Image (cartoon, rainbow, N blue to C red; front, side, top):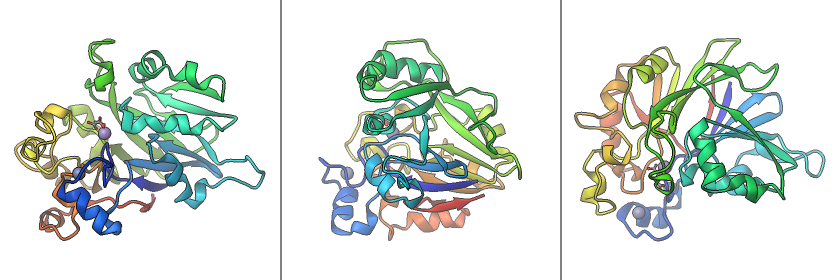
Amino acid sequence: MLLQVLGTAAGGGLPQWNCACPGCAGARAHPERRRRHASLALRADEGSWYLVNATPDLGEQIEGCRELWPGPGPRDTPLAGVVLTDAELDHTLGIARLREADGFEILATPPVRTALLGLIRLGDTLGPYTRVTWRELGGKPQPLTAGGTVEIQAVPVSAKRPRYAAGTGEDDPAWVVALRLRETATGRTLVYAPALAAWTEEFQYAVEDADRVIVDGTFWDDDEPVRTGISAKTATGMGHLPITGPHGTAGRLAALRARCLYTHLNNTNPLTDPDAPQHAVLAGQGLGVAADRMVIEL
Ligand code: MLT
Ligand code: MN
Ligand code: ZN
């Protein structure tokens, strides 16, 4: 299984266009600290790739990943589709940038699909431009492509819906899912969970035997969004388990056999500064932070 990390920032990116917080100012002063919105490129098959989430940075992310470049024909593309972990805007706004394609596939859970079709009206909007084929992302492992060796499975992690969908639809734990990706030939497994509201039994089961886990590192601690003045809600209240503290993910991850990395860093997270002492705290637990353009071969 071959993946490339296309971005590791939470909604807004690093820097965020309207933010002068120390993290964003630091990224303006030190371009190597910039992070694009959290996303992965996943090779399904020889010459066939999927994006995991479609961010507002999608165009630049494709240009930054040689395997996703078009050719040899003028409009040939290796990009077959997009897999969505949720319906949040930072993970879906990029879909409209794919409208130049002849067609592409979107794998999504039922509540995510319903929100995008009914509330954002993505089907009506894109219909005149391109052909979108929807496929249900379910809780049972399914082959990502016919004849391919990557299996994909959604693990529901939260009923938290996007703000634009507040008060609509059913309460459904599949509003936000983690993805379990398995190479059938080798059994090697990666779990990707850029948003994790609760460490459920199902999630524990999904990560227990994984080789790689890339997980929600939005906030360092629960109070961070309130302390930094970006929200009246705590991290957990925003649907993101913090890294440290009583509900922190670090202790749970450190107990796994997998190599574990954090992604979806908010610009308030001290880990956005490579010199922050928090990096040593993570390293002491055998954990780290994913980097943009990191290549993962499993
Ligand atoms: C989140 O991860 O909580 C959402 O993406 C927030 C947002 O970007 O609006
Ligand atoms: Mn987000
Ligand atoms: Zn900021």
